[in-house]
Every structure is written in structure tokens, then in C-alpha cells.
Length: 477
Ligand SMILES: Cc1ncc(COP(=O)(O)O)c(C=O)c1O
Image 1: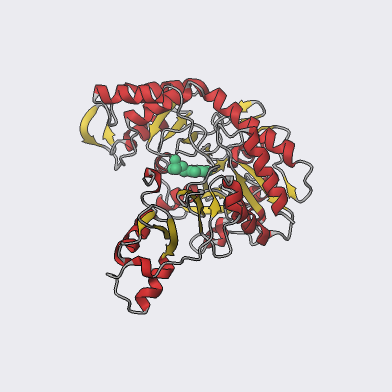
Image 2 (image 1 turned 90 degrees about the horizontal axis):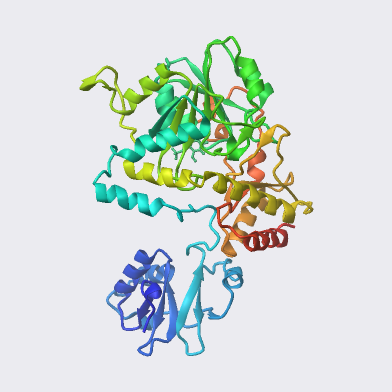
């Protein structure tokens, strides 16, 4: 009997080349293990092998048995998976784990689900109950009790005046900027190193993003660079609290004092972050959050805008719903969007909010554990936090010492071989062709080329972190 989890990767030796190719295409692993009638593995076939057969004009109706690679690499089934992953690479993309009877019990590959993902949501509270409630009530679309409940609970958590649930943070940024009626030469200052959503939102609103250098300690807006970029054309500043470190809000506010510049906080990565003991998200005219699946609080996809002013809230309320007049259905005063959140997303949000303090605490503990194992390792820099900052560590990042840009990608690869998902830090937007025209100064920080984001999900154990850190130490020379 072939185990269910292996059915898409195992094929019997009587199968045709054509059938094998189809299986390889559908399993996404680039290979199949071929077994005989006793279910014993007798060879491995890769998509590359089949391509060669096709080039040689061998009929695809022929049996795969004749063409498989019998001299394949395998490991005993009891091999620890991180050890097995260590053997991947150098052209070896997949390894079967085989027991004494010759049966495949599992396999490791470069593309198989990572065992230590970068992030994954914690859905072990009331999420399921509230979702079932939505289904039982039939309110699965953008009406239902959970939407206003989520808005209210979120607003209360932040002691904010107004809140509006939206379909994503990007939708929230787009709405906020749209409500400002930006014109062609209006400028909005954004950080040069960020997930690109705020930059795109400015462009989609016909205005010009101005790329501001980042501070190499906090990874947020560099204040002296920001000061030089503020002009009479500046209509808004988007403060992104990148990776969970707050922007220097006092300094930013001082720079725009008595100017008609709107302050937008992008808190996508910063739920739980504080600036001088005050939650970020409480400073901006608009503060916008993301609840994408990799965020500290998730609704699958989703976002929230917090507002200081009723007028801004009312405008975005209408814009969110096709520009419809909230008091007169199907009467449209402005050209709007459909950026509504569904009741099901909001139900998840309510369940997640019930444990928000715990979720944040876990993230901070993860960072402390990484610090413990990495702080004395001289070849990398661990995250620095400003004295006025309470970092919420959406992602924990390490920076390789200068001159190690190439080592960075190699380290990510080595970690992936060990089943650890790590990713490069965000690239400077100014280095991408589509955004380079938005830079005003030429010397912008390149530090993110040396940065790696490490697994940071709630539930990541201290043992996992120790293992990751050991792997890092063994891989950086
Ligand atoms: C800083 C920042 N802004 C905006 C977004 C976009 O969020 P969403 O996926 O909810 O649109 C992200 C997503 O990761 C982000 O990191």
C-alpha cells in the first residue's frame, strides 16, 4: 500500500512516460519515484530526464521503467528531516526516504512544505466557532454583526475615535489617499525600504511618491532625509513602522507642525508597537492596519483604518461602498470602490482580538530568544531598538556584516535546506526600474541587501529558535 501523502509522487513502473510527466507536473516537485509491483522503489525520474527523452524523439507512450534512473540517491527512513535536508542542493532537489523493505516512507525536497515557516497564523481560539456562526446565520458577505463588532472592539483597543474595516491594508491606504483628492504634482513621502503597497497606493491616486531614505537602526523614515524632502508640494507622509519598529513620531510631527500635511501611519507590521509608551496607530490622521495571513493579527485578508476626524471617516465610509450615500441607498455622491470586509473576515478578527496581548507577547518573546542565541555571534548584527521604542517584532531580522551581500542569499538557501523558511528583507524601491524615478537623493541605504527575516510565528518554540541559530552559526563564515 502506498501512503496517501505519497500518492502524487509515486508511480508504478508500468506507467507510460506521458503519465509520469503528467504526475510530475501536477505534484510540483519536478520528480516521481518509480515503484515495482511489490511497491519497492526502483528508480527516480525527473522532469529533466523526460525532457531529454522527448528531445531524443522517444515515444511518450513508452513505459517509464525502461528510462528511469536506477542509480538514485536515497536516505534511510529514520533520517532526521533537517539532516536529510542538509543533503539537498548541488543539483539534488529531492531525496526519497526509504525503509529496510525498500518502501518509500517520505521524502525531502527544496520545494516541499517548509517545516519551520516564516509565519503562520494562530487560529486556536474562537475563530472556528465564529466562522460557523457566520455560516449558520447565512451572513457570509459584507453585512453581519461581526463587522461592526470588530470595528468597535478594534477602536476600543486603540481608544480611537472612528474605525472602518476594509478588505486589505492596501485598500485602506488607497481609500485614505483617495479621500485627500490628490492632484498630479502633489507629493506623498514614503520610505524607500518597505513593502511596496504604500508606494503603489500613492501612484494609483495620481500623485507622486517621494522615496525617503531609511534609518539603519530602526529601518523607518530617516529624519534628516525627511526634512530635506518636505516641500510645498508635500501633501502627506506615510510613516511605515517597518517590521514593528516605530517611526520617530515626535520628530516627524515637529517637521510638519503648522503645515497642511496629512499624517498617515502604515501600521501593517506594527500591531502592538509603541512609541514612547503610546501605541502606534494613535498618532496619524489616518492609521491603517493589515490583517493579511502573515500578520500578527489576521483575518485572512483584511485591514482597518482608524481616524481622528469624523469627516474623514464619513468620506471613507462612503468611498468603501462605491461612493454610496450612507443615508440614501443607491444614490452616489462620489466615485468609490468596493473595499468592504466580509462578516467572515471580521469574525476571525474578533476571535483574534480576544488574544491580541498574548499574540504580541509571543512575538516579543521570540525576539528575546533569538537575541539570547545570537547576541554573541560577531558575524551578524541583531535588531537594534531605539530607547523610545517598544518593538513588536512582526518579523525578526538579522543583518550580515558589510561586504557580505552575497553570503546573504547563500545563507537563505542553506536555511531552506534545513527546512527553515527565511526571506530577504525588503529591497530599496529606488533600485527597481518602476520606482527609481521617484528618488530625489542619490545615496540611499543599501543595508537591506544584507538583511534576512527569520521565522517569527506564534508557536515557534525555543528549541526551533535554537536550531535555527545553530544553523546560522554553522553557515556564516
Ligand atoms: C508596510 C505594509 N503596508 C501595506 C501592506 C499591505 O497589506 P495588505 O496585504 O493587507 O494589503 C503590507 C503587507 O505586508 C505592509 O507590510
